[in-house]
Image 1 (spheres, rainbow, N blue to C red):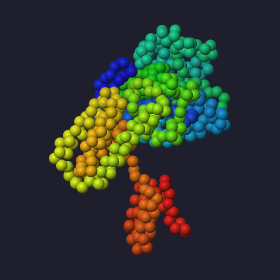
Image 2 (image 1 turned 135 degrees about the vertical axis):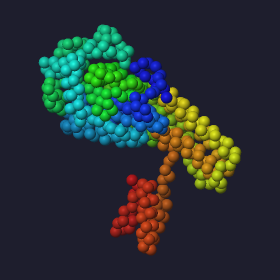
Image 3 (image 1 turned 90 degrees about the vertical axis):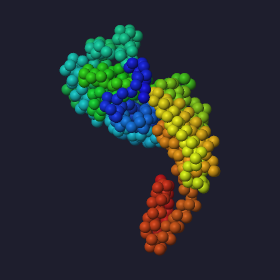
Image 4 (image 1 turned 180 degrees about the horizontal axis):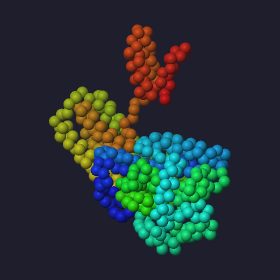
Length: 469
Ligand code: AMP
Ligand code: ZN
């Protein structure tokens, strides 16, 4: 498997630190609002990378944080007259709902910055002791950027260019930095803000230190993959490298993976530009599987432009696969022969070639666009080769292959059949009859069948009522 490493600007063979295991950290969202579909891009593409590595047999330890202390969270809390914690808890819950809708697996661990303050104080203390950081008079702690000789290696920037070219890095006159390039590790509290005691002042951590600390705690000093959107390369990931490598004296992450932007009218979709759609808004119009399909129809390192037309074409693409699978289910039920015929056995060999092509695409830096094309080829194969005469073994094998390959991409293409009202009523009637005949085992069995299809029964005085959950 090859992955493109931002650090070396090359596609490299993926060799994990520990055979058979992958440690992966993906920078998560700042939780002060519903996530927009730009934020959803790294969630979907790196969840897909994780699923593919799991498919290859790796045990993946996947950590993704929630930034739950930040200026924007505090601002929102003040606007609503509630605590910052209330805001972050609310939007963590909403984010998890959106993730579930997009079929993004929960991370192995979802750490939150506010739960990891001790670790941050400890890492900052080490950095001060080693001379890489200093506390200014007002209690702000800064990282001494020029002390880290490799600073700039991820973003391929040179320190002097940085200083000359980036005005935002210049001393504002208000801060007490030794050097304009130094960045904040800990900052003093302001009135009304959440704060924690520290050896330097009551205050709160800078953003970058969070990820260094949580990655160290949950994955160790050295990890395989660190990922996020490309806007995080500089300064966030550059600063994470500086902090972690100066603290731990080890290479922080072996492979750095970055997704390109989701754009709208060729500009980055972002909260600050106001040109965004939330995942929730999209879910009102589409099944979120369509959004997932849309994201995976492009390579994760290519910019992707969001438009109504592209969403419609994603919808029809996904429908084509879903319909092929539904047709195969229908043929399965109709088939008159169970075992494979000789001609079918021959055809079955083709199935393995599709899987090999799929893996080849995904092994090439997770080329999901090509992987989806392979699924379409398989759908074409199904539509031409499977028919009313086919054996059920043949039809099932093709169907299972399509479902399995789609599943590696996190796409659900086999729709659970919804029970129609008539069927529900019939089953309820049968259950009542079983109860009258004191066949409680059968009555329970029917309740179970209904529950599996999302139907809950309630025995009331007026009789049995049901509802979908
Ligand atoms: P934020 O909450 O802004 O820190 O973003 C959380 C994650 O979403 C980061 O990995 C960002 O790089 C990513 N992200 C934000 N906007 C976009 C976008 N328009 N396209 C792709 N990724 C984005
Ligand atoms: Zn981060």
